[in-house]
Image 1 (spheres, one colour):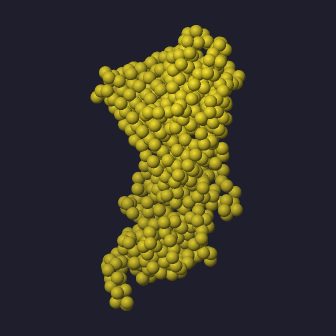
Image 2: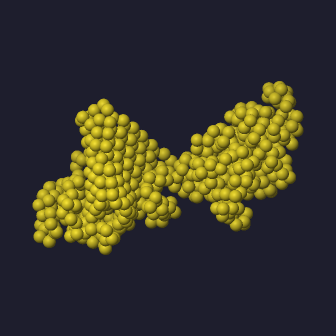
Image 3: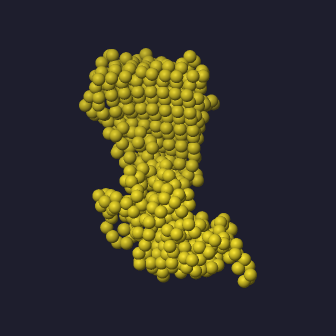
Length: 379
Length: 252
């Protein structure tokens, strides 16, 4: 009997065979990814707490219209110079759900930051059916980019992939905001850092009961720094999974992870922060915290710090907490005349605040508005 | 202004207040003293509506209306203020944001216009002087990292901002040295007025040297067993609580 992953693989491979001729470029890489399609339904530690099979119940039709018109200075696949395009499919994995993207992608938003330049860019991606856009960031030495990517998930299965190639002394900050009104999300952010500084702020504001997962895979070369933070705003029966795999492959690399979940109703969140310090690599510094605020008795969270360290010269710290609104703080605010609901919002907003503060100033108001909408119960 | 009539209250099924009666009129300062576990903190929490405590008998009336069905915020808006024995730290909420929300919630319920940011700051700067507070505290998270003295000053500052009709000061002196106590007591004295009543709950008489009450009550085992003027506090200071216990025992 065929299992859901085999059925899905067969269906997507058939779709690929039919479409193959019309997909733009990268034919070898696409064929390889399609042939190797394999979904993490069984025996996958990385997907242990998230039901990958739920993403496979329907075979969606690839639909290449997530991006819309690109903002000025953002290049389409046709416009990418070869020196930039060569990095496509080179940083992010092409297996698991990302394999769907590697096989079927047609849309690319390319951001090439020339040496010494500085800019801010906002992208909005609207996802329906099988949505597989790619974003490629190539940051040259001394450049600085602040990028806001908003995902609006309407239905289907969204598998966007963001690849970041950050050359020495460049700085990239990615503010990644997912708002779902239906469907499922299985996105990837992958980075290759060589003596550069990259920051990621991942925000999920959940309005549907689907699964949302972000896989973050980052390789830290010598002297690199990766600061990640995340905020899950959960409600309904939504399930949200942050999965980070951070490889310290060069000396003196620093990684920080600061993740917070606010979970209402029957929502659930999973956080896995895998840090791998490779053999012979010295002077690593890795810190991690995962804190959850439960607003309902039926919400739940799983947090897994996951440090794999192959040597002694490492500074590592991690902590995880799960708690509720502090009744003493609530009483204190109410005893000053602040209504119960407003007091709860104030305390919940403060819990989110620490992550909001990590967002670059240019996008902070936008993220704060997402949090406020959640606190006010708006979808 | 405040009437407690034969109040019985319990926490986790354990009776704490066992028939407490007390009347406070506008302008009066009442001190309630008592040994540990007499029910002093319960008294303040019950008046303010803390939901861990259940009133099982009697009534609490404020300006003639029963408070028992009112939420803590409704009691605060009616004009009751509690200075906490242990002010709560609230990371991530700035003192100014919190206090502006509180002041405007109270003003709104009185039918007054909300204060603008500018007017709020102006008022805050003026009222901070009462307790020698510096304005950088406004930008810090509520009570977070405050010293014991700063926390207590912040309580009195909040009282000055909220202008309550009745202020309950729960163990205001705990954890303070004499200098801090003097500053805070002078702030409180400046807030005394013919319209405002105060209920000062304390274990030690020391505070009452600085904040002289009109009436003193002794609370033992959930009941007020003796009332008098400021002199009564001094007797307690000299002789402790045992003689009162003995007196009650003899009378029973």
